[in-house]
Image (cartoon, rainbow, N blue to C red; front, side, top):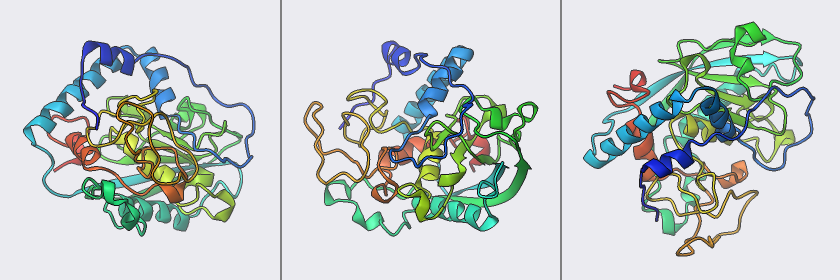
Length: 316
């Protein structure tokens, strides 16, 4: 199991700037066979554009670790209102209210250990599997027709001036955008600490909720679960580096991302050769192969809702 050590060197590595993400200019309607989440790449671009973001995120890390040490975490149930912003060029992209509700339902099941596959968690991890205890309620659906073929990952879909839809009350409501992202990207989220004007989660319309067999293996709404996990300050389980850290103590160290439906047990070649928690929502496996958060991830998520935390307005 990993130890979380926050040092100046770690912070510099964690918040290094790498790539700018731009609007995709090409249509991309081919089926996606491997999960691709652009959250880390978008974070890198935001850090490059706003160096003060690294300072805010380091402060959030210090706050989170202090609360973990004192065990002063959220005591009670948080209910999060959700605004869904639908940007569409085709009828298929103009997803129905019924499909939108399926995504809310999936989030409620996955974040409350009510998913039907929760019982599949192996005995090795049964002691750390978690009921997060956060619920989601659909607050509003906003729709807008567009001529854009794809939106890319530069947050254009969140900006009215660029043809998108600005977020509604982002400090007290979770905004989801459903649109054609392009580039093989299923979705991306903004981590706590980013600008309110771009806060929320983007999910490609083909992978929003229970989207049908044609969009398998990403048709069970787990892209939403994965991205909302990022929005609640969770990192990819492999730490976006070879044998990296996700800043959680009870998740095994992974070599890198896993794809498809890995056979269990899948051993890491990192120090100690632990069995990887491939069924964790923050890995890259298919929708039907991810079905748990850990207690450490729960504590990390809970900390952001405390008084003084980056999402305290959602808390109690």
